[in-house]
Image 1: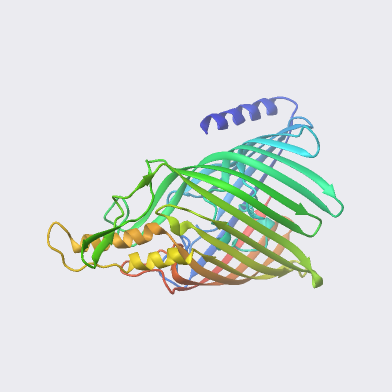
Image 2: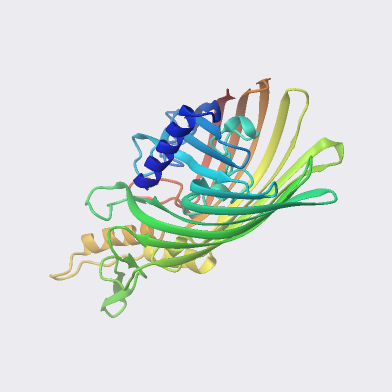
Length: 420
């Protein structure tokens, strides 16, 4: 990864020293969010309010070396993906592009994947109406960035421009867990992160005209734990008749996990200039974190009135029923007082951790909001959303001694996004 960044830096220095054309731009969002609950939702949001969840600052340099060759570097400052209290400066994009023909594009370097309709521009809040992209869909993929290769072909057939893009690459990423009673590596409760090496390969077809866009994609992710093997399951160990526990330590191990991901999206203009946007994503995980297997979808309606664009949406995310039943069995498993060498208190605490490692989701969100276009490059947004969890939601950091089931969370969001 570092070698790739050094290569791009050297390329940029060579280009700026020569006759290459370059343009510089920037973007950012200052976002505030506050809920009506004392516990954290989506890592940062609670009743104390936070600027951390939605705020971001970025800059981009585009180089045109020749009609066929170019390069793009985009850097951003945002909350760290592997820590809940720090910010990181990272490169979102850092690639070289080559157009052998007008309808072919080859990119090599760090790329953002063409997953959902707004994945590639998700950091640029001024490019979409929502105060926050629906987390039920936009959080599904294990990673949205890779260092690798992308090849795309574009052609026109009557009304639509079609683009078929194939990509492959790898990336380091982190998966967040929250231990209500204890963490995997500590007796204290709180969040912990497992670092992963991820390779992603996919094929995405997009059709668009002036007003409408459609996208479908199939992806395959190969994930490996950087610290060693992955837990394949959470086996039940019997201690006595009718008494036992789910083992979070001594489990079957695997070197990697293959995760298929499917995505589908559309944004169309209906009669009356109403815009309908709907997206769906699904992935399947076969490991101890099988709760990450889930589908997510949302349906949104919006309409522009001058500088105002009010919108409403409904979003849903759910793990398979079998996983939710397994979560309930683990989360509700308790053993009575036991003779040595067993400790009922330690075993019961470990059951909460085992349930948390399963990491399942079952929630829906309804939201209504509006954006107001202050200038062509800046927008003010306000949104109220209501989220309800069913059996469990791993977006919720439930207080000690409780769980995330049947929670009701109202969130008010206000943000200012700009580009320059």
